[in-house]
Amino acid sequence: MKKSNRSIFGIEVKTLVLPAILGAIIPTALLAFLILANSDSFAPWMVSPLLIIPAGGASGGIFFYLIGFLWFPKGNQKLIAILFSSLIYIVAIWISSVLAFNFTGHWN
Image 1 (tube, rainbow, N blue to C red):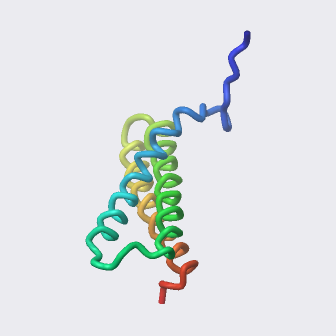
Image 2 (image 1 turned 60 degrees about the vertical axis):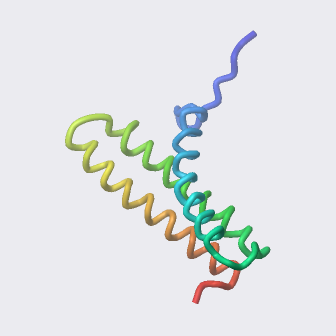
């Protein structure tokens, strides 16, 4: 029996799962802390940010892995790639949070 090799642009999907999970954990932990620290109870509008913002973190984590470790694996290029991809990771979380809170009507 032949094993199916799932890949996107020559990159196996299973190698992208861990960076996506790690990228999503950081904003999820921050959101969970903010929700638990709030004295109000959980409101239904909080579901949307809890889904959209970690998705932005996951996409930023995948981008960080691809740029920093797969496409530029060594040398000064790796340092520049990690710095650039860190900036893109923060921007991805910021844009996803703006999108989530604008979607719920809590963004001024």
